[in-house]
Length: 217
Image (tube, rainbow, N blue to C red):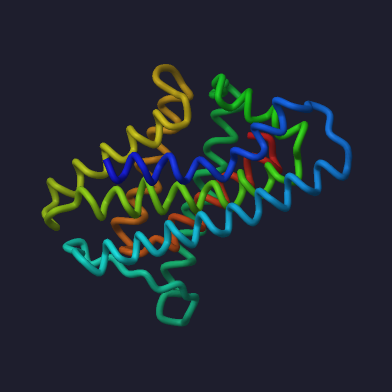
C-alpha cells in the first residue's frame, strides 16, 4: 500500500497542468509561465520527498546492495559508456520499429494534446521530473519493498513485476504499445539490477523521453 501511495504522490506534480488544460486549452503567455513555474516547483519538491524515502528504505534494508551515490568518475566511466551506447542502440531500434509499426496509445495521444497546449510545463514534466519520479518509484522503491533477497529468482520476479507495472501505468494493456513499454521496463530495470545504481536508469529514461520529444518517436 505504501508503494501505491508513492505512485499517486509522484503523479501529483502533473496536476497543475491537467487542471489548467481543463480550464483553458489555449492559454496565454502569463498562464503558460505561471503553470510552468508551479509545475517545476512541485516537481522539485516531489523528487526530493521521493528521494528521501528511497534512501531511507535502502538504509533500513538493502539485500540487493544498491548504491545511492550520483557520480561520473574514472571508476565508473566505462559503465557510463556502456549504458549510453546501449541507450543509443535502443533508441535507433525503436525508431526503426516505429517507422514500420505504430506503438502509440490513447495515453500517448492525450499527452501530446496537452503538450501542445502547455509545452513549457509539460516539457519539464515529461523529460525530467516524470522520468526521475518513475525511476524512484517503479524501480527504486518497488525493488526496495519487494526484493527481499538477492537470489537470481527473486531478482527476475521483481524485475518482471515492476516492468508490468510500468506498462500498465503508461495506459498500455495489449498490442505493440504494451510490448514496447514492457520491454522498456525490463530494459530500465535490467540496467538498475546490473549497475546497482539508480542514476543510470534515470539517465537512460530521460534520454528515452528526450529522444521521443525531439525525434518524434
